[in-house]
Image (cartoon, rainbow, N blue to C red):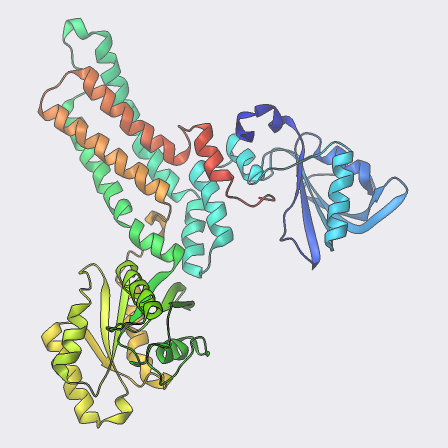
Length: 465
C-alpha cells in the first residue's frame, strides 16, 4: 500500500486534474518540493523559479528543442496551496496525446505519477484539512444535486469537525483526570467528579443523537431518494414514470407484463435528487421471466424510502385497498395511493373514491391521469413536502457511513461509562471505556487513524485529486 511508503511523500507528484478525453483545455497538477523547478525545466516563457506565488505565466512546454504545446502555468508557493507544498498547474489543450506527452516529459525531469487521491491525502497529512474535510472533497466532486453539494460544502468548511473536536476535547480533559486517579489508586482519591462527567456525557448525547439520526436522510440526499412505483400490470406505472421525467423512458403497451425488470431514472426537485423506479407489475403468473421481474419489484419496494402505489380508478374500492395493504409497506416508508385514469370516470366518482380510500387507509390519495402531466401537480407537491419535513440544518447532517458508525460506537462506549459510574466500577475500567469513546470520535476527524483506513478512503478518489 502506498500510504505505508512514507518516502513517496517526499517526491514531487504529477497527474491530470481534469477528466480524461478530448476537451478544449486540460489541467495538469504538480505538487512537491521540486514542483516549480521541474515545471521550470520544461517551460519556455520566463523563469518560474523566480515567479511570485499565485501568478500565471504564458509560454510553451517543450522536451528539449521539441515544443509540445502552448500553455498557461500557474505557480503556487508553500504553504498557501491545497497540499501546503509548492505546486504548479499547467493548462494545456485537451488532447490526450498532448496531456500524456507533458506528463511524460515532467516525469523524465523528476516528477512521479500521483496515486489516487494523493493530492488530498497530502493536504490531510500536512494538516491543512482533517479527514472529514478530505472526504467532503470527494463528496463535493460527486455531488449530483445542489442539496448534496451544500452538505459537502458545509463539511469541507469544517462544520462537522468543529462539533466533533469540541466534544472530544472536553472528554480528553475528563479522561486525563481519570487517568490521574490511576496513579493514586492506592490512596483512593477521585479527581474527576462523576456527576459532572455524567452531565457532560448527556450533553454530548444531545449533540450527537441528532447527527446520528440525520444519517438516513443525509444518505438519501447523497444517493438520491429511492421512489418505487408499484402496482398491477397496466396500472400506468411506466406512463407515470415517462410523465414525471417528461421523456419516453419506459416502454408502454396494452399487453400485460411488458415490464420484466425495473427501470430507473432521476429527477431533481428543489435541489434534491429523487430516483424513480418503474417496476414490473405485481400479479400471479406462470411466466418464469416475469416472476423474476416481480421478485425484483418486491425487493425494490422493500428498499425504497418512498412508495407510489398506482391503481386503476375503475377498480372496486375494496380491491384497490386490498392490493395496497397486501404490499405490507413499512411504517418507516412514505407512501401514497394514485388512482389512475381519472379521465375515464366522472369527477364525482373519482373524488368519492379518493375520499373513501384516504379516510380508511389513512394514506395520502390522489386521482391522476398518468399520461397528462398537468394532473400530477398534487403528487409533485407531495414529493416536495416530504423533503420539507426533514432536518434543515445542513451543517449537522452526515452522509458518510463511516462517520455514522463511529458516532454509534462513541455513543455505545459512553453508555458503558454511564453504566460503570452507576455501578461504581473502578477507575481503570471507566478509563478503558473513555479511551474507546475518544478513539471512535478521533477516527472521524483523523486525529486517530490507521494506514488501512487512509488507504480505504483515498484509494476511491480520482488520480488528480
